[in-house]
Length: 347
Ligand code: GCU
Image (cartoon, rainbow, N blue to C red):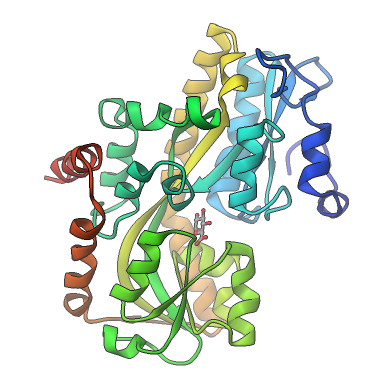
């Protein structure tokens, strides 16, 4: 890790609540609840960022570099300390902590935001994005996402800044490669905590078990789960390939992570610092996208060397039930407009 050596082991012993109670050493805010993190050596504010990935993951690398550049660009007035591996809590807890101001920033999957505002579910639909490039062009187009990203400010004190791709997600199993939805009958497939993704598991032919990311390895190992679904990078970095070595390319979804920040903390930045922050965040998601392909190739190689097999599926057999989820879940005009805008950008 860059700069300060932070003892992850010591930190892991602290509960998220203790951290929340200690937070707020930085800038005072309107309602006095959300301080801007620790006061650093240069009297700047270090924002804590909660991440559920390892330090090898492109998200950690791009965010760590983001912090370094932000600190330089603001002469040390603002910095970011990335806490990987769920040490500040799984995504559901992190979302709560950022909302309350106990932690300043987090990366959370789109599925988490769908639980706060159902309009976010549109970007969690299978097949809404054709590929990473298409996804990135939509989720950073302010005309499309401006209202959506500010929609949690009043209700939850959260601002959404944009996204990192999760790449294409596929299914992997503990016992045998899958070719058609029928092969998944009777399998317990772990999904993220989202009604849409519970329905998606069923569309894939399986039974859904929603669960936090950090619990998946043990659940696969112990047989509570028969299958997971993710991208190759997490499959490798979380070591799921060790316990579920059969990867089947369902490519059912191009997933999306969001960077969220406590709205009071964001509002407390001077105009100049906010401009630097926006610029460096743009550079961060561009770097993340650049790192993604290589990280994916690398993950496939490493997992293969570790005994995993990667197989193609009958994509046609999976397509129809997955596409039907859009009709089933889109139930208001805002969602329809987001869906139409996303699809129009693909053409
Ligand atoms: C990906 C994604 C995470 C998410 C995880 C999951 O790794 O980047 O944000 O938590 O999938 O399946 O839970």
